Length: 357
Ligand code: ADP
Ligand code: MG
Image (cartoon, rainbow, N blue to C red; front, side, top):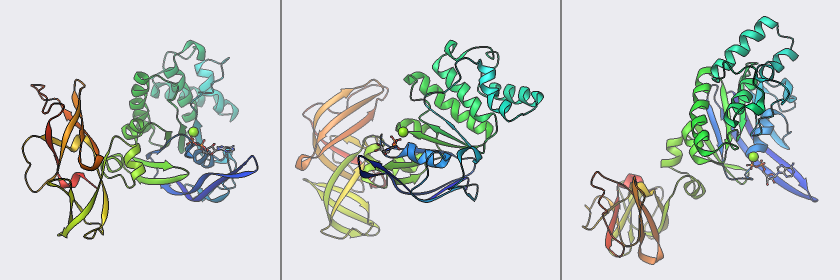
């Protein structure tokens, strides 16, 4: 692995009290991977990142880079660079000088500086803008200068802490694709911190979802979305429906729950036993809505449509189920744009068993 954290804890003393910003994080990031740390504000992402970079010392635990224990190694002796949301460019230097700065200080030859800066500006698509000052550039361009500056001395890993946070949505989305391309092109490990789930899902090979100083799930984007490991992950990533039911029958890898009048939900057994209470999660786009009773081999519950919202490419239904449970259903708009159900209709909601967990 390129980066390993082993039982890393960070405590601060604030107003005479101990605050645990990071409560015990262990993870291994593979060489060449686009790895994201995703979680709400205050969950410990920046603190974790700063311990990888060496700007903070862990209170407990070990940080290893490329197999070497660097827990006590200062930041400038670690083979990683960091990019911040506030680009931190030198305002009085032009693009070329900003990118060349680190190489100059290391006394790299003029010829090598010329080659490497030229190469980097090409990669971040800024060739021809060498003479511009930061204030003469857009936010996206400034961020690309910061990226070139962080990559020009060929670190083995790049740490990025919410680097697109200051950009507007359109530009941010364009930069997400750009960043992924740059990472592929330079082939080094990227560790990316964000609180934006779409950003993490778009770019990452793997994502560590953090909450309250701990990693709740570490997996690929698809698995995180399709199989959230905890209720927190299910709620934080995308929209989820939750329902509580009692296990009625267990057999053949599947447990069946009764829910409301005529409703049944099929879930993987996972230790469920008859009479046990379980909580089931279903994504809104996995659910179909129909007036007729669905086939017996799917999960199906009855409800009343409380609200229909037409959103162009899809419709959203709010459906009241038994016992005060509310479900949201997303329906892709078909060619004829017909709405399947109206407010007040009594409907069945159904989905394939593999889509609930
Ligand atoms: P994130 O980057 O996920 O928003 P941070 O790592 O910045 O979260 O912070 C995690 C927690 O640690 C927060 O509750 C924050 O207030 C606290 N914290 C961070 N740095 C310090 C510090 N220097 N002193 C005291 N508390 C801190
Ligand atoms: Mg932060």
